[in-house]
Amino acid sequence: MRKLDLGGKATFKNILHLALPSMLAQLVSVLYSIVDRIFIGNIPLEGEIALIGIGVVAPITTFITSFAYWIGFGGAPIFSMSLGEKKEENAKKILSNSFILLLFMSLFIVLVFYPLGKPLLYLFGASEASFPYAYSYFMIYLAGTFFSILTLGLNQFIIAQGKSTLAMFVTLLGCLANVGLDPLFIYVFDMGVSGAALATLISQFLSFVFVLVLLLRVTDIRLSFQKLDKKIVKRIFKLGFSPFIITATDSMIFICLNTCLKNFGGQDADFYIEVATITQAFFSLITGPLLGISSGTQPLLAYCYGARKLDLIKKAEWQLVGFALAFCALCVGLSFFLGEPFARLFISLSSSTPNERAISMSNQTISIYMYEVIPLALQYVFVDGLTGMGQASYSIWLSLNRKFILLLPLTILLPLLSKNAFLVFYAEPIADTLCSLVSTVMYFILRPRIFEKRLAQNNNLLE
Image (cartoon, rainbow, N blue to C red; front, side):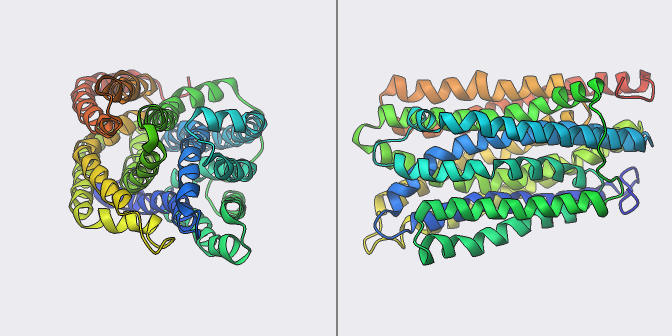
């Protein structure tokens, strides 16, 4: 914390210091998968069907990633709170416990998902044509899960120490390696989708080595190896459950989306999945950096909450909202010009006669998704703000409201009742707009109670 005074009065300076590198890190992380899809979509002769296969894999890999967020976003806020309370030994225990949990979580996921690969891919939208590509990519990608989960989870503790620029370089290293290795393995070595997965695996390994070196030798609070503490483990799982649910249900919704498109799309099922893959890729270029704003500044809120500097939290909230809304408004404006060129990146270069129908519909669905972007800024800032202040139960409820009460039913009912697969693309904009309004109202109802509770507490938030 010597490099950045999280409890100081220059809150907007602190927000920028934390948010900008975190936004870039999230953007680079999103580019990991997008770069893979662009290179895969441009494989000669088989690019489009290979891209559809990767579209089936994407929600499964997102679900796997959510386990890293469970531990990383669960441990990092209480880590920052301990630093705010000036209890560095507690912070060391939290970091050590989080590392052990990430280690076991990653091994468990690899062992569980390997035998389930084939049935899961068919269940979640793979056709006979797209399955070979989906399976080849997924099996190799899964081998790198150990490195990706540990990297994503541990990187949050670098951000939590005010060193978000270093955390950004962890992600940037992996992305640059991926960009360099993708064309080498896919085209030069003629490995196709297997080459893309192998490039991702090697890139994840490099990022893992870098984050481990930083936590062992560079950061103020170093990684040590201590026994698991039941109180800390329970707190990590409880607080991290909301980010886990947000990410895990994102994948479940995407799986449900693919399944609905497969069942209601008829002969155009694979075509619709291709459009959904491109649309979700564009949307993630917005939600990734938006998550960087909301989650990247959690250490600031957590530190101030631990130090009982509640006025600074109020000040930071409004600055965060303004920053997030400005970013989202800019993205909506750019989408009017970039939607079609973005779609062409995936399917134009692999054929002398580009699929203009896919490009046109992708541009249309991207425009539909933009209706939700500005209100979604409120959802991210307020729900992640609650998590940053350790209010897991509230953030979990608001997350479940978004996904299970609104989005999931709409994703199923819109195509089911209309018998029109295309209407499924309206489900997320409708649900996210409504839930953003609910979350905003609930946040300002809950905040006075949260502050009163903190003022009445003793100085140990782990108890």
